[in-house]
Amino acid sequence: MSVTISGSGTISGLAATGISDQPVFAGNVLQVIQAQSTAATTTSSTSYVDLTGMSASITVKANSKVFIMVTCGTYGAGSGSAWGATGNIAITDSANTILIDTEHIGTITNEAQTAQHATFVLTGGLSAGTYTYKVRGRSITGGSIEFNRPGSSSKGRLILMEIAG
Image (cartoon, rainbow, N blue to C red; front, side):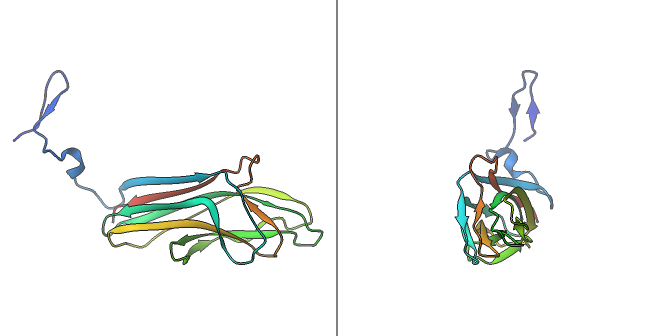
């Protein structure tokens, strides 16, 4: 059957499944998932902790990759020492395997500092299924670090993009 577009704009002749059956080429973005949070997570732990609201799941087709982008606000209070409070964030999978982490973020003096940070990573080809990714944070110095601090325009975002393989 041929596809026909009438003068009024109606289309006939498409299969019941429609446009979704069109070919997908490597590199096409197939879907985008976003989680965002303004809920603060404060820690002085030198071990990674989950950041509130910064987790998302995506169901992908075989051989797809996932491009993961994160923005996260941080606040490090001054401590009177040369390094103050410093920390970092990491993108992990559901088993807490680190895919990428950032360098020190926060204050490197005894003065408080607020900053917005971003990082990203591309996974390798995946099997079809559902994958969960999350953002975790920690203090490097043991000083108090606050992630996504309310009132500081520090909205955290975790964006997952399925990329056709």
